Amino acid sequence: MKYFISAAVIFLALFNFGCSENKTDVSEEQVIGMRTTAMEFMKNLKGVLITQIQTSGVLQAVSVCSDTAQVLTNDFGVQKGVFIKRVSFKNRNANNSPDDFEKKVLNKFELLNQNKELNETTEYVEIVQEGEFRYLRYLKPIVLQAECINCHGSEADIMPEVKQLIAQEYTDDKAVGYRIGDLRGAVSLKKVIE
Image (cartoon, rainbow, N blue to C red; front, side):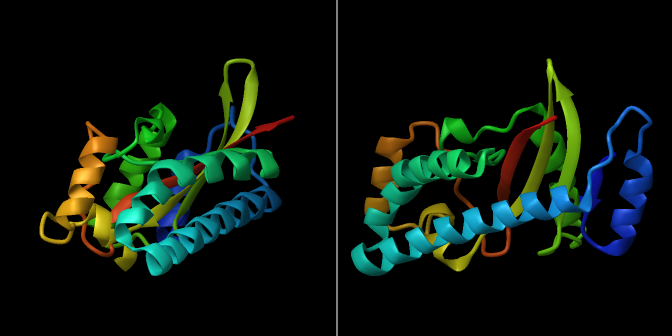
């Protein structure tokens, strides 16, 4: 059974649409566990980023997203027993490219965002079979915050030295042109289940 949670009406519509006899029900305990893990991860990452901006400035904060964030993400995932990454159609790091499942959910988030129905309760969870393993898949939208504009905003928002560093670190950067409140992507969690 697929769960896609936003407003109650959207939840009910997608709940009924997404039900399939071949899918396994997702328990409330599983949803809460994945939600808690995603929120904790984002809080930790944001804390590191804010501290870096306050102590060393925006230019040094670029390294948080380029290097430190990848290490923190991997370490956090190992600690929690999940695969975790940040995904986006407009990714900066190729490691943050969405797989087919994540693309499907990101498109749903985009539609909600366009309809002004994306909010802090929006999430998506489903149990899927991938090869010989069953996974609990969970995505939570990432909405652009004020501190992110320094590296992901418009041409006018990003300082020249930050632009130069980003261009050096990421030759195929697509993660610019955002405004505060835009859908940036999603935190994606994947956990093997019995």
